[in-house]
Image 1: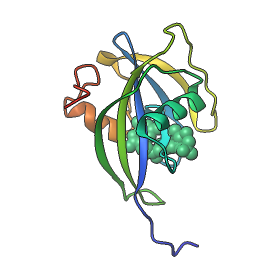
Image 2: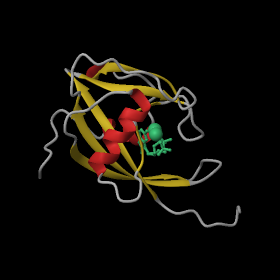
Image 3: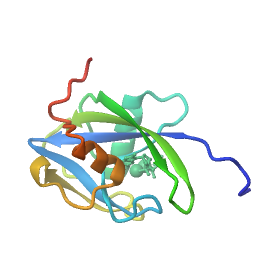
Amino acid sequence: SNTVRPVPRVGVVVFVLKGKSILLGRRRSSLGDSTFALPGGHLEFGESFEECGAREVKEETGLELGKAEYLTVTNNLFLEEPKPAHYVTIFLRAVLADPNQVPQNLEPHKCDGWDWYDWDKLPQPLFWPLDKMVRSGFSPFLSDSNP
Ligand code: 8DG
Ligand code: MG
Ligand code: MG
């Protein structure tokens, strides 16, 4: 029912790195519609962050990742949305298991398609949790995985 109190959820998203580029897709969703976002999704019961990231990337793009590494976490409130949302978003990074793989758009109702974008020439608009990180100077290339 619409009287159920909303709860925070955990999102796991992945910077898939290829040379100086990252993988982005334009969202088709009530949350961040038509903005460019990382592949990823909701943490399922019992999953590690790395398992979730690998599973979501595989489901959404068909890509097989090498070992994923934790980068950082952000707290994201979407209170302006028709349906308010609160995500704790875990950011991982990984490279492709086989660098010759090509991303497929396996969930076309949720994404316009995946492509590689040079880190220095990111498309606009970025999904705002990602935009906020980029503007703060965060880089998935420089980041230390093990603090
Ligand atoms: P699922 O049913 O496959 O589990 O979920 P999904 O449909 O793939 O979920 P999603 O919206 O792609 O990701 C879950 C949430 O993670 C999203 O609603 C908000 C949060 N999130 C961020 N930044 C990003 C991002 O760059 N990409 C994605 N995909 N989600 C992000 O805070
Ligand atoms: Mg998904
Ligand atoms: Mg997703």
